[in-house]
Figure (cartoon, rainbow, N blue to C red):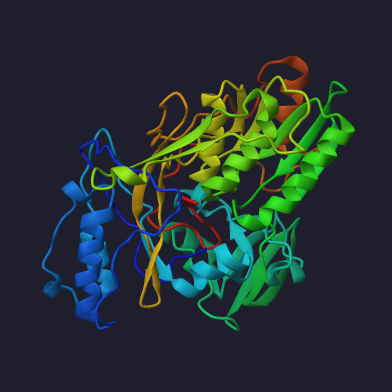
Length: 444
């Protein structure tokens, strides 16, 4: 889900703001007198001063100095540095149509191709790989696949996009937009032209049981989005795991940018089962103006939760494991579940939104921070991997050739991290995510 206006910009706070967390309720802010630019800016200033987590230290510029609401929104975000709170690269504004499509309909507009742009870190000598293709998307229909190397984008050499860290052409503004990709795979070149369309998300693209290297039954579950449409396939997946008596669970969250807190709590409850039922999953803490909105989410006991508590859960993660997906990991750790994380450090977003809409735009600004049962939060540097394992974008995700899944299987047998190729140096995160990405934790 790509912000269509405004930038995901910096906002930082040097003060710890105790506050309130909401369970997804309305922010309570009034609507602007009209949708004129002046009235929208007046409303926005009031909303930010009331509900923004960092309102005490955010700037208050003169609205008259900004010709657009988007520019004024950017100016209202705090951009300083602090040991307690780093730059906020998450607050954003997008069209309400796009927001409702994603979280209401479980659909998105685009081409359905995601790249490993972050991993190139602006180094044009590194190939630009296709890392994921959405099922049912225009890219899938054109048989674009993980492991394709992008040579050019709309005639522009991929090396230029990498150097500029600009992959915006891979995002669509409207249905019918076109994208031409020159691709290379195993020495064969081809060109495809994709037409942007609205297609349904597949939040749980994989749930299967495999036999690991030591003969143990591993349930492998890939969850890409924490949206309500994931509920039914999650229940079906865990019913399958129960019936086949899995001995270990591998949860692939490497490209999960987040979504609904409630869905993450449900996922964690399937994993924890009777061991975690009734314990605290997460507490949401807002600013000091809204103490009454504090909220707590507890572990439940779904009917198809794993029957016997597993000795641990393996999580495949990386720099795109963000927000509500990180909250799953943190919540399980807080309830005493051993989490063996394989891959790279997660994105580091222990804060979230109560999205608020006005005049056709939905504002997702940082409203709260999240903590687990032990009070652990503020992992702004990300959650570290137990076993550092480098991705191989030429390997099919969750195949026997996938280094992350192979590492999980080896650990299940030996109880220790396998030897792995060293991770590449940490990439500098862009202010704007690659198209096809979503980073968010919504309080509902």
